[in-house]
Image (tube, rainbow, N blue to C red; front, side, top):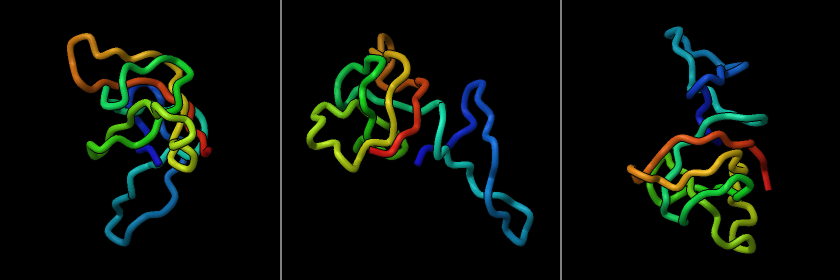
Length: 97
């Protein structure tokens, strides 16, 4: 899953609460959320499928659709080419595929 709450999108529901009053991190299950991405799989275009990268906490473009089956976490809703940085934040549609 993807931890939600970045950018202007607020998480809707957090399920679970600990005895000490703290809550778990909200995970996006459906809808739109922001996700941290890397260029490990190449530049990202809107519509590209996103999978987990080798760097913890980052997604990347799933370069090979046939290899991405079962690993897709979402679909990019905007492009990221990393003009000045190696990682960035983009909108993603959460999906299971």
